[in-house]
Image (cartoon, rainbow, N blue to C red; front, side, top):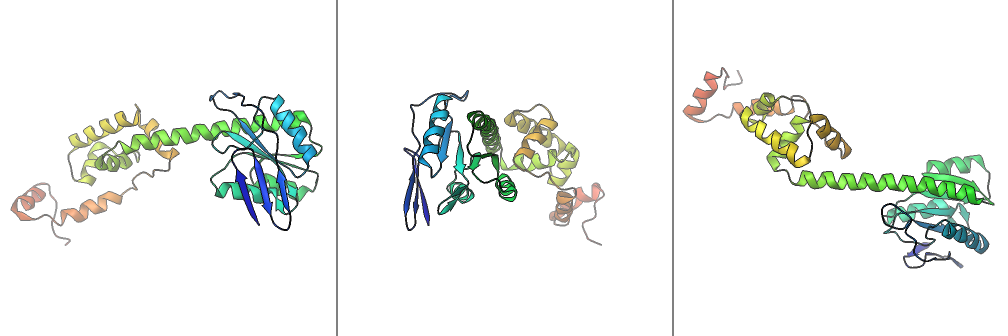
Length: 263
């Protein structure tokens, strides 16, 4: 079985022994979102009557009833259809990079089926015949969920852009800073002086657009940057000390009270 999504007028074609086409009405573009982009409600059902009534309801509420993966939106999908399961369709869309809120509708009241559908990430599970108020309430939840997702993605993109402005050395110092280490500790670990670390720290804060370490930690946590583990660089620094070469290095290390031999 193959499933094809046509981005113009939402159409799902199931190619098996029979071809079934589900085509909801595509109303004129209506700008309903604060983002300045239309919210698209993609409806998939094998009952033409259901498609027609739901598309009219969605259009009357100011949404678009079509398929546009480039615009914010949600899916309203019949859970049980000939040759396909609503959750299978959801899986296919995700593989194509279309991951959005989904509202399942079905005539079944089987509890395990409903529970499984909700675990699959559904916003809601509505029993047919679907009432207008119930569907619009579920779509409102989907709108809020999609808005949070888009905001999170925008924030992550902004953080990554800021991180890309850091030099390799600043990126290294960043992990030490968010681990809570002092400038002198970082300087020792990286084999430099405290004054240099202060300069790096200042530039990091400026480039990341933060004023406190707490803000910096929050930003890095959002995209999974791990702080430097305790002792991670200290052991490396200790190994580097044993590699001091030449009389000047020997004299400096001995003045600092550091032995150059493992023994």
